[in-house]
Image (cartoon, rainbow, N blue to C red; front, side, top):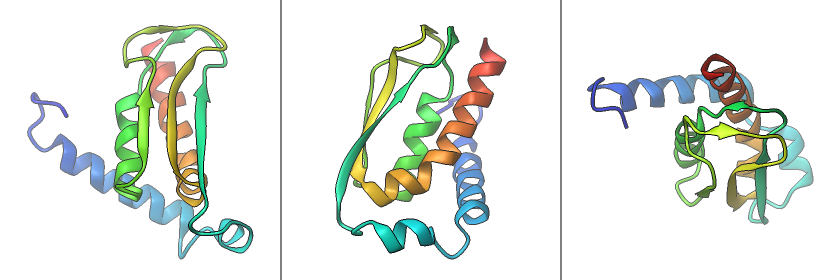
Length: 117
């Protein structure tokens, strides 16, 4: 992902795996109890306020590491200006994947976009 930092992908993967372990522990029990594990869905990340977008590539990596079948369609790129109401990206995957990854994705993107802005 970043040619200036040779082991960036490995570091990001370790961070994501650690964060998911901390967040999910031995599983997302609410999702497991309420959602068919094979049910498919989609979600959009909607921008809430103006600023500079950051973390889209990280979000894409989080979904891919959790579920290689997840498909992220990017609508706005890292570094672009953003306005309230715009869509940053859309993800199509198992609903359980979306629910398991959403908190980590949102935390990363909020933090990174706040710093970029």
